[in-house]
Length: 191
Image 1 (cartoon, one colour):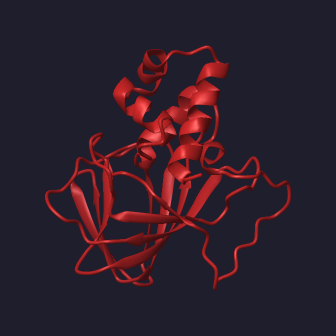
Image 2 (cartoon, helix red, strand yellow):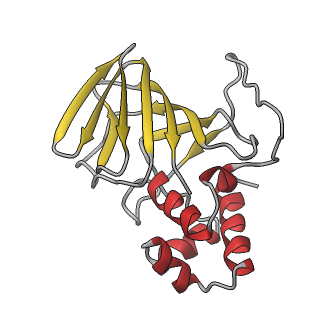
């Protein structure tokens, strides 16, 4: 089963268990019912912002949608074996791919409040997508390459060894500058 199919099935199950229609959930998470329909069908895994909004509307943490099998104890990820890649769609509801490949570092850890990822970031192709925002905070540490962060009206360029911590309610976008990059990102989203 693909990540898209697993996430879609979880969204549908949680929505139905709460007695919500697609339209009602779409209203609560401020997205289009057609986007939810694609997610539930396993046709698409949206960017993090819509997933966070869906999780919040369902009263769950983001990790509940991304986890496979919950674990009570610590989750150990060895440096030479990054977990599977999660490929989100772009920020455009019609997009089918993104320039970000996420490796979740805490999959399965129950009741966590942070979402740590190693993310392979590709340079942007085409026009800059709209900035996105969501409740919470993000910490990014650049492992390799250079990245650019559009944050509100300001642009920051970071190189390997640089980091940034910001409130993610401010509209933002992260992309590679010049060539591929790899970052460690920790996302905190209250629910």
